[in-house]
Image (cartoon, rainbow, N blue to C red; front, side, top):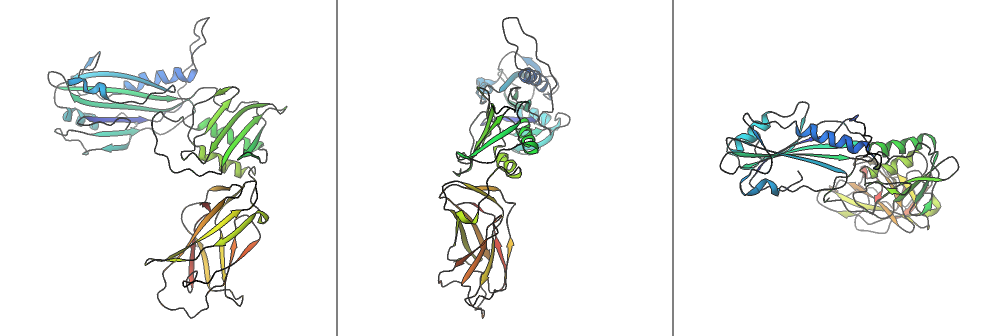
Length: 416
């Protein structure tokens, strides 16, 4: 929900829009017509607010009819890519009974997205929230939200407020049709140009990414070292547009500039790196620019862990994707019966900035007793995409690296 509501009953219906198909008006001779997607957003706001499920006997009101103007205090973040339409009603009965009716009559085609409070709401409940969504998204009207709030009305009964909140994208915020190639830079260093199918995937990423809604966000911690920028060029090499995303920004929004116009931030900035990787546009790490080390194990009751560190010793960044491999050798050179096994989720494309490091975690069960086999003296570490295996001499430690025998779990390489 977008507001923090205390002592009110709230129902919200989120609708992710399909294509709206509404044309822009021609406008006057002296004024440019509004963006076609803004026209679609305004039409969607009118349509969505009309979906309000009203209890029998509800009467429309021209302004806030709630006691103490409580409904006027509902907070909504505002932004230039947002259209809001608000309506009010009054109805006899308690706010709890009105909320119970609204819960029992969701708009057709909606599905439960989120709720807070008792489900279903009690006629005597003092607070309740719900969101319902419709599947689908486009690059035009990217989200529709119908938020309903109930509160005691002046003089008795219940006041209802409905807010249709629509997010839209400018029609021009697209990769221009005349783009024939994309010049890629990573942390300011030139990478490989993207064309053909790779260019088409970047075009689709921009076309389908939803706009970022106004308001505050609790973003995860950012990681410096993967600032990407793609400049789209026409057939003569002239720049037409730019897109970019930076891992240092935890939310990693997608920035789009077409000509001299900067578009609103889009979601899915994390999707830029994997598309450039698939197109072969990001320069892979090589053995010559990497140094690998393995930290001493840390042993806990539940098991043991160690960290593999991969450092880029060069000035230019390089990228990797995947899981490292580990083979353990005794001092005699004999391989120990320990097999590595991938763990956790799928790997991401990560960039080692110049002089920066990546890491992976290895885990294994705790030792149940003494091991008759010799302790590992060397770890042969493989970095994904690099043919060379790095022989790392293990420092003497009271704890052996890896189990006496069995699996050695390995996480994907990521930022340290």
